[in-house]
Image 1 (tube, rainbow, N blue to C red):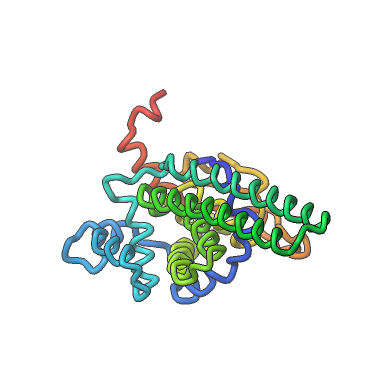
Image 2 (cartoon, rainbow, N blue to C red):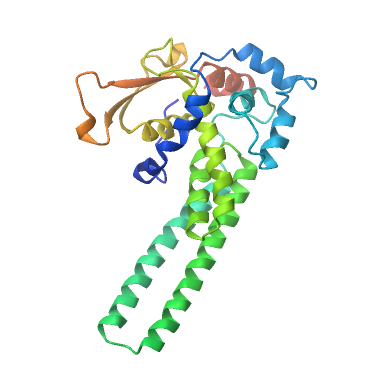
Length: 277
């Protein structure tokens, strides 16, 4: 289940290292009982009935508990529209917009600096600065619009959730940013609660291969190699090194295991021809 690491997360996402820690403290690490999660998320009488969890999630209800998030995240594997390799066309558009926005901001900054060096009048500099800010705001609004569409298409796109959160903070929309902070914290906490990742028995459970790289980055590790040695057993193994070399010690893990047995099983059920080619 090899997947390229999402480039938008990388080092910038490390700024959120404290986020999953809070959720991780609330949920005791334990191997998830997928049979129980499947049964309860498909049972209309259960408090973990998936449509009910979706409704709570979409209402921005901060009373949604870590255990509900755990069922929401893992329970998605048993829903009709689940696809572990699912990608949104809007997410690709959002990535492109972000890159264009970065380039525009860099160009605007250099333009402003050049005019300052030319000693333009304060009035003219102020007018230009306002124009540049409006242009940047327009770009960010377009990014937010596309990110919203991407998340309606795939609510578990952790990369886009982080991107949207960051842009909203840049736009000073603090309340909206806090909502996405809370969601990201608990979705990541749900993953981290499933194990330690240090061996197959305690592998992290993920519903999408891209989430493996998000988790590693948040834990402070850089993926250096993917091994398919355990793939036939239903595990991904990714070798890592600390992003901060000062963290490297004799007991530093060489890599982490991810349990992808259920994603592979669900994929083979829905796309039986994929493994017959």
